[in-house]
Length: 608
Image (tube, rainbow, N blue to C red; front, side, top):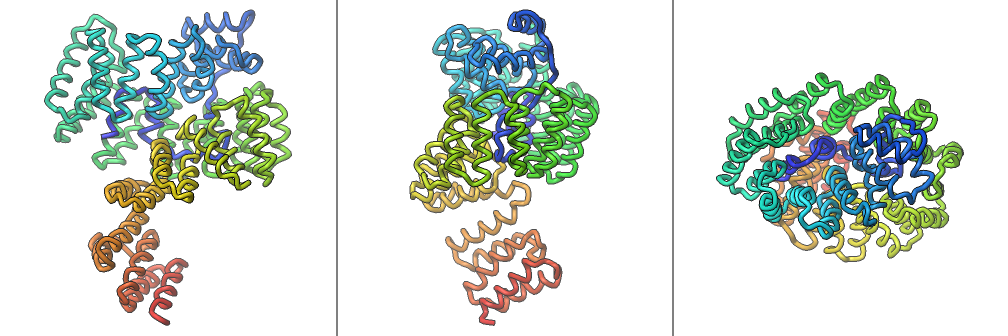
């Protein structure tokens, strides 16, 4: 029931959970999550001016001056706090984490910054990260209502509905008229399958919103609206849930939470096209960059990379903002079209000649991946911060094969930026190339600890631990990695392999189901399932299973399943049947090289 957890979340869940764009963190640039907005100008005392503007709700206007101030004085607590606040208020939660972390240990900002950091973690990282962030706040102020609400929401997202319900009860005890906790209470009860209590809680929530004298936001009304749909669905009444979601969309057609939940619902009932259309209509009505980017990423998830690129390019060319071009650049980096990514970054910098260091950092990193080392060195020289330059130099050295120098450069950068998951990951890569596997394990663990979803550290760590024979530790690392990479096929395949080693059949079956739901991975899952059935019940059972599944073995997309079938037929000595199966595929698709290879293998297995 993990899909219900976003009911207590903010708008960023639309990108993070509902559409799960699989960001393979192969670049330092992506790890910095570039997302830049307008440039402001503060005169006089820049911090005093920033405070005044933020008090007036003008957070975007303070971003660039605060970035410049932090570049000059990275140890300024107030500047970091104000920058983190501005980033949070402009929807850039992942970028807010670093400045907020710099101030949470100071008595002056510990509570306020801790609350903001928890919200940032809720929006862009794992529930465990959010729980870790809120604990110091509640140690200082055990009855901080917002802190308790956030901890309840984080517990709910972590699947700990019992603990979340206890926390919610504590909030209600302290503040009986609290409105923010009403929907999480309903969701927690649904998660515990206490349906009658959930129904009563839902009715209480409706009554509270109708009779309260406290202000009720559209976000809260929208959340309650979709909670009604969720309740009907979980009660086993999809015929009642569907019109409820439709009604919510009619009332709140551009509310990010409502759109998110509606899309999730339509996906859940197998109406993916309707989900996509819902998102498209939200964009057409609002014309917001948020919905267009979300729609682009969904199209990519559905396998339509051209539509994803077109939408992102339209956003960049129509709005002519640095953020539009950097988002497009991110897309090209993820698709490994580094030349196009460099061009997009260049346009972003052209629009903002006084671009912040992080944008130039991202541009230099992409130039390194494009193997344009001289250009990268020139851009690196314009980056003011020493630790960023050190990371870029290490990245360049590693790309050119000098792992020893790269590790020294990464060490220099890490001393100044110890929690950077990308730097830790790349230090691990350098150590691994040097054969220092203990150092690699240490760096990968630090990267995983800093942000599980940011890099491939968890996957690499699990592979090394598997090679060392420590399967349990490998699974622990891989479990955390999967939490941040839920659409990563390699991770599920490794999980299946490790689960087979310890004989956990249920874990294997669960991973196979998740794998089969990923784009283009159903044939891979079917082939692995055949192997498992053959191990448990023999080759004939595996053959019967695939024959009963109506898989078209003559189609190229199912070549991996045909390969697995041929192995089982050979094990039974059924070589004539194997040749018959593969000949049919060759006849249907004579241009497919893989079928000719399999034909040769079938002939070889039969002694021909």
